[in-house]
Length: 353
Ligand SMILES: NC(=O)c1ccc[n+]([C@@H]2O[C@H](COP(=O)([O-])OP(=O)(O)OC[C@H]3O[C@@H](n4cnc5c(N)ncnc54)[C@H](OP(=O)(O)O)[C@@H]3O)[C@@H](O)[C@H]2O)c1
Image (cartoon, rainbow, N blue to C red; front, side):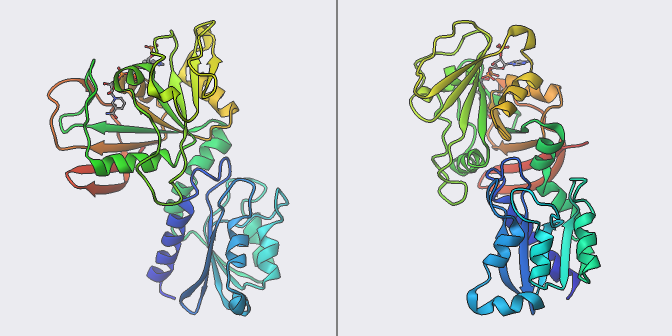
């Protein structure tokens, strides 16, 4: 098969696996695809932490009347098949059991128990194995997993809306910067993360809901991230609508902080001596937050950028001018994706390493 065709299968698979960015929790996003005679027989992704691996879902998804084609197919996988017993049996065994003779792997596993061993087991059994197709894209697919697994902390994304002259807001009044399409994109992002982080000033001024209510397509719909409110010195107004729905966690250093609504809100006390971003993120990691979307405001975001604690940026830019206000964070990095949204632009960037 032509290289370009193989590449298009793998890129499609990587895109599909990315859909489980949030639900895989601390596990990697992985996709598997069986291709028979130049047509796709089935696709499977690892959908949820603890559930079947992609290879198993892919094999299970083959229609009943086409099961006999499995052994004549090529298996594409975005990550080296596992060869250890964890929550599920090894995928290498599943591949051998189904007598698949050709496996194309985008990238090797980072787990030393699996790395190159999955490939070796398959090769020893006579399977033709190719490694490295769309390696860069497959590594990008693993970005959250690598941060979670290697650094034991949540993956940190910053989302900002900026005017054409670089402002993200006004000092003491709420302001709309982006158009409706940008707002839909922002809500889709909310469907992708475990938690949203905002500062007290944003809540006080904008009175936002911070729910995912404009994006209706699966799999990002129906998920409202937990709102994490940063309020070290008890400056948050307690009559804000954020406390009426969804779940909130307030991080504060203030002793005897008054909970505005114990039904929706948990107060987490962090001593002033240990109040810093690394520690705040560690507290959230221990509460099983694998990914956080830092929504604002700009002062809060800039303090995270200053400490180089961000892993990716989502920038929604409008073509209108604000003239004055609070400057947005400077998210310098490699652009991985961009999208035109009418007179707005969406850019997904990763910091240069
Ligand atoms: N365009 C956008 O994408 C966007 C998004 C959200 C909000 N906004 C706008 O931004 C404005 C509010 O922005 P803002 O920056 O004043 O408010 P904010 O981010 O809501 O509040 C500032 C927060 O940053 C914290 N902070 C500052 N430096 C810190 C550090 N070094 N370490 C830890 N925490 C730190 C502050 O804590 P301390 O005060 O305790 O230091 C406070 O919690 C509003 O007008 C809103 O409309 C724009």
